[in-house]
Image (cartoon, rainbow, N blue to C red; front, side):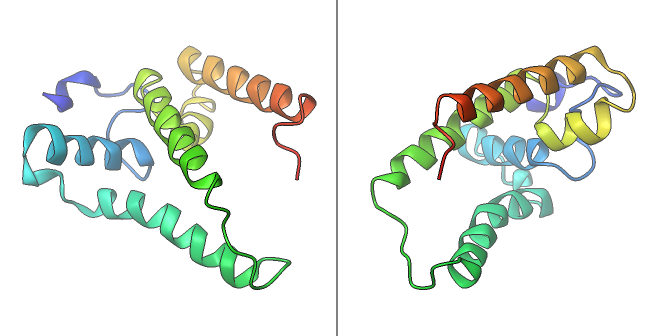
Length: 130
């Protein structure tokens, strides 16, 4: 079961506010058919991309600018890779950055090191340029 994958007290354990618990709920519903995964954390996780899309459309520097259809598969693939990374790392950036780093958890420090390194590489290679 999914609950057994995260021991209590480890950064990324399924408690508190973060995308990891919502992702676990989604996996329960999709893969196990267990409807107990339909809780508030799942809807918070699903609301993040929807809310950010609405906000970007309402407050973008160029009103009326639409999302290019070529970017949708890229965004979905990036989200899937981030979800896989969150599962492998026992939590996402919020869980590690705000929960694990203050506790000096080695897994959180390692995650943040590689998150910053990957972002720096992406900026230097021009992948994250506007």
